[in-house]
Amino acid sequence: MRYYPVNLDVKGKKCLVVGAGAVASRKIATLLECGALVTAVSPGVGGAVADLESRGLISMHRREYEKGDLAGVFLVVCATDDEEVNRAVARDAEAAGVLHNIADRPELCDFVLPAVVERKDLVIAVSTAGKSPAFAKRLKKDIEERFGPEYGDFLDLMGEVRKKLLAEAHAPEAHKGLFEALIDGGLLDAVRSRDAEAADRVLSGVLGGGFSARGLMPGLFPPP
Image (cartoon, rainbow, N blue to C red; front, side, top):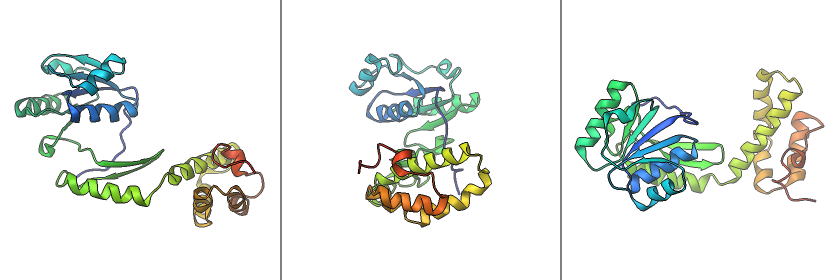
């Protein structure tokens, strides 16, 4: 593999975005969704980024990028069409040991951003190592059609099952087989059809009494 796959926790971490156009606004939005503390720097500011600034969601420096902007930064994303700025950010970040992504310049990056499908906490990433973003986009669309919102709901339910098992002092190493049995037993199909009775049959069959789909996820299944 060209890149080492990883899910990066940026919650509460300072992240810098160089640029304030359409591409930069998308990068900023994703960082904000993940809980990052975002600062943007650009002499010109597009409407979407200006809106984020006016709502107090980001800090904004309306000027050219400076090397000192990287102080205390966890990662930087550069989204400009100025090759000199792109290379300066990559060079400065490399020297400072700051993770950096330069939009559409994979050769200048030490990480690339995949196409992402989100179903709540289920995240599926597609990367072509920067060789064909268009193909990654096409694959993303195919995956979105294959994996609907029920997969996120199913994962929520599995998380509630896990919490209950841990609360009852089940040994964590014993969970793998139980979860595999829940998956193989049709619990996902029950979630997809919002069939609480079917879900209860799977839960009780694998875990015994005391596990109720409505009890674990009251908002997921309609009342009887």
